[in-house]
Image (cartoon, rainbow, N blue to C red):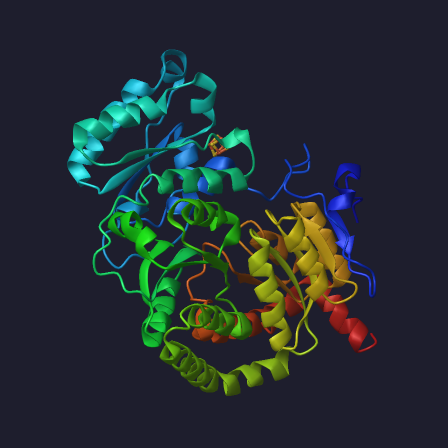
Length: 457
Ligand code: SF4
């Protein structure tokens, strides 16, 4: 067992029955030496913009930054796949001394001529911030020369947290918003913000809205095209899923284009249904939209409920730990696990804010550990203390779970099965069951001793 670093103690609370929610000192830089699970600013920008599949993405920095985020998101495209490359200027010692602007300009001109992208995003990394390349000036020159938007992403890795990277991505995207043609957009139309088409989830959601009679103008950024982003200000409502990454863009669109936004989640039956009803309520001038939404929810839940109940019988009483990027996803996961009869014993996020953590404490059971900006040692300690059967997280949490002999469910970039939507809830239940009930855990020393205690040996 390890002790918490003194500077970190206030960022961990245990929900106590009948007491008001504590305020976690969140949204600040990670404690030095704590080896945070957070990624850098550049990575934050890269994961948000990555799924735009007809744009050129070029990482201005050493090759390691590009390798680290190469094909990071697994976002699917129904058309071009230019996003899957990880172009880099591969800055070397001589570039650090004499500057990398010429190299960047030459790379941009050559790549744009070869691939004919609709726009280009240029990501600044730590070293670019240190040597002071004027990336904005290079982008302006190349934009004039080539006639496409060439957009700097000010994402120098060291200048904040992953959340600052989200903001830098929104600023770059916002240069495109408002530049497209609005003709033909339905009066009942939305944009889906903060959905990244992992395993085809965007296509499931688009189908739901289509069945309700609501047009999706742009999904930002799952399976996104530059033209859609340029005209997305013509939609009537923004539905923001990954609130950590996209609220800044939604607020700018509200300020400048009068486009309201609502926070939604597409994970779990309750939240998925609520997301569809939110849009239907907004378009109350056409009551058939609400009628179709109710019909859709009834059909979809009816089709999967019997199988969900079978998984629930096997999973009831099992315990889970959740550690995800944004806290809003954690709310949905707590509710989805409850639907399967499971208890959430540990829950945390990399980028949650004060209100997120208050809400998380409200919906959690007494005794639940709630943690902000955690690290591998803490997470391992909490999992052992609570003796959880399942860890839900991303690529960096997977080895923690497996080393401890705990089942794992990937709810981040690497998932290959859609977990959003009604069908996603069924996939989630199947995956949770397969991992928790796997016979492999009987060979993990800790699990083996649990088995012996149970039979009194
Ligand atoms: S931007 Fe900086 S922190 Fe991020 S991957 Fe590159 S070197 Fe590492």
